[in-house]
Amino acid sequence: MQKLIDELEKNKDLSDEGLLALIGMPLTDIPNIGAAFWPGSLRASDKPPHSDVDRHADADPDRYLAKRADTVRRAHYGTNVYVRGLIEFTNHCKNNCYYCGIRRGNGSLTRYRLTKEEILSCTAAGFKLGFRTFVLQGGEDPYFTDTYICDIVSSIKEQHPDCALTLSIGEKDRASYQAFFDAGADRYLLRHETADDTHYARLHPPEMSLKNRMRCLYDLKEIGYQVGSGIMVGSPGQTPETILSDLRFLQKLDPDMIGIGPYLTHNNTPFANEKNGSLALTLRLLSLLRLLFPHALLPATTALGTIHPLGREMGLKCGANVLMPNLSPVDVRRLYALYENKICTGDESAQCRDCLETRVSSAGYQIVTARGDVKRKI
Ligand code: SAM
Ligand code: FES
Image 1 (cartoon, protein in one colour):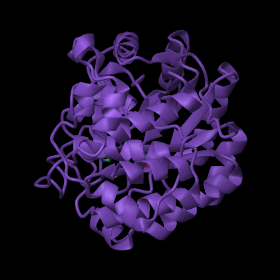
Image 2 (tube, protein in one colour):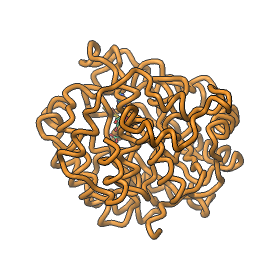
Image 3 (tube, protein in one colour):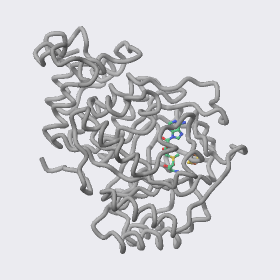
Image 4 (cartoon, helix red, strand yellow):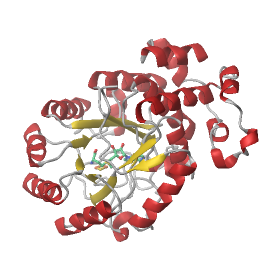
């Protein structure tokens, strides 16, 4: 395995067989990187020197993989961690994705929408806390017409011209994406979810298609957005082969940001009886992504922090370099319930920011006040 990992690092690519071998390695509940790389959990004298990690690479390939990914991340981004202030501005959605807790078919969810003024007070508070990127995320909610979104986007950019603005509001036609871009939106997040047609159909109702999802992503790129895509790890029906198609699709798309997190089950969805995704596989894939896309912005997601109390810190150790704390008003946070037991639903933004600062520095990195644009030319 060490040879494959070294080859992947050197060439930023690997054969299908090689990638499948790495994706499919046996999994443990909590991978060893947690102990080997975790500062607070071991006395300094207990920590193996790096040479040891190399010597035991084949006995513990995940640990070696994490180390190589961390080395590559440091070469490109040092110890910097970029933060994006996430504003979940509507939990209304016209879609019915089988995995998602805010799907239209969930009749037991209290629905909310933030007003433009509420959104602007979230960004103002975030700016004071040092955020220089804001992400407006929501279900696909027709109440927010293109004109209204453009108005919100241009108002945010007027108030914070030095900040980057990301939209994550689902599938739209090209003209809408162009209008949001012209109004000032810089980035767009739209996970492709899976690049395999059969798997896509297992996750979504028939009115949704992978073809349209991909059309959206290519439109966004052509318009000039910095684009983010990604998958849920362990979504029902996912296999090593579907993950391989995800990696190959991502290589074609060449996004600036790749968001992956474990799939987590929600009771009021058709997937209520499905298992959660795995922490270990999510961390492994983060490291593989870092080696395949050295420049990429890779978030350690809220879902990773939900599946394990130190999930986000482990994510940083495995190659991630972005965090997306919540800036939404506290009273609506628990209503943006994509999955159960979501973390950080009770804390004020300032508390979240302080908590993250501590977590990030205890893992050996530091949060920086910057837009955090992708660094492609290294
Ligand atoms: N409507 C926008 C869209 O479709 O991109 C943004 C909101 S959507 C809820 C954001 C992401 O949440 C999805 O792309 C999906 O990967 C993730 N998500 C939804 N349900 C999830 C679950 N049960 N577990 C983990 N992630 C989930
Ligand atoms: Fe629309 Fe999840 S089904 S955001």
